[in-house]
Image (spheres, helix red, strand yellow):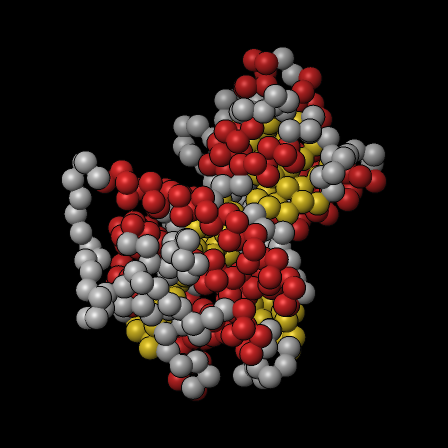
Length: 404
């Protein structure tokens, strides 16, 4: 086990990094149902509870729906709760996700991004979590195991803020992150305790101050509750930035809030990415820069809340931009592209964008693939408008676009 009296570097998988972050966050209830490639998270947590290094109630439930229900039950009485899932399991939880966000229950959940059936696949893309964007959960996409550990701690800090009280989903690319081993620095427990105080909320069932937690509304006042959810999500933007800043001051690592940039200051062609492929994109940017092409990468960390202003500030000065989606909304385009394109629609200098759809079902996205994206972005502004619309969505590694 890790000696929590000092910082220690350990060689762990992304799943294990999440488990370490959970332990440091001191949850009181863990509801667990295993599903590949998330299973290692709940296995490690069960071991921590068993050996006494984590003081928590571990509930091995019979399904993902039950895992979310148990986490909701814990949160509704003021306990810090954690659960984890993936793919079809996330879909099985879908009903509960809306209950949790509507009930303002700041549950933290790790989702191991994995493709959805059919065809059946255990490999990763973002179609599972992207399908849940409207469920009212904060969504972050991490790049590596260190960010996974650190964001698990930050997630509780953000979700439990009195102005937020919103559940939080941490997304890790299946197998690429969940099962790949990296050197990770584990913070000291004492410092985490200072950064993350015990959970306290007035929004809970209590014999002293009884209140209804699962109620119905009429059409006359339902919108007011939905507005409060929306406002809390929007307010979380400042909480995210503050949590990252204070984390950086205490632990020496910053993730720059809602987005992160690489070589974007003077970039003419910018690729928007999320998750582990960002590292590959940085290598491609370095190659393009050597060739004299001003390329950059915008790492989109949060899909909800969506960082509209940051995206506009960074992309508005580009000649053209691309969005690399590991998701497709069948019959239209990738979900990330839809959101980024909408953010730019009110800009005076609206650069043309292209949507690259890749990595579906775990297909590899190489440095060469990303270099070809930047070459396509160079040609994008020169296209006639009709040709531009025709080529706007391209499937990576297939040699075809959606209109062919």
